[in-house]
Length: 207
Image 1: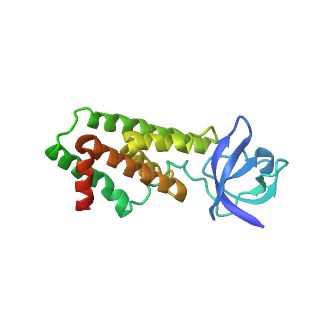
Image 2 (image 1 turned 60 degrees about the vertical axis):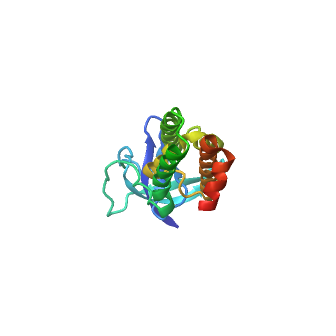
Image 3 (image 1 turned 135 degrees about the vertical axis):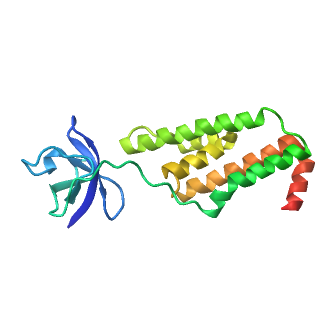
């Protein structure tokens, strides 16, 4: 059975790359020997037709690669489109800013808190950037627990923006559930830091 896909990664010096199947699923390893002779060096963005076989290590790999008649060389991908904004994702940062304003008016805001959120968000954002790049290059990944800790320690706004802009970590349900729990714990800690237990009880009644 033949499949079609786009060559998304190619290491010309090592003679291999990866094909993203049109129908979705995991990327397929492809070696230069699988390409027809005399067709030149493979280029990222090319549309390919191929069969799938199991390699010596038991992993899927492309074989008998061909260039479909309708195929044309596509420009190298510039990156995925941003992830769609759900209502919760669109509202969480504005709602948190309203909460910050309320806390500041009611109990006063500790001067260093916003600096901590800003700095932690920048660190978290670039952690997602590096992890996304590592995922594309099949390199060492940042542990999910590390990303969650960054979110818990005030970096969740930057992490949320990175998830949306990079379309990264937005489809794995278990990761998203824990991510939202880190936001909840962080926001509760923010209120408790400024208002104490009485403030938490008051916000609970308002909720």
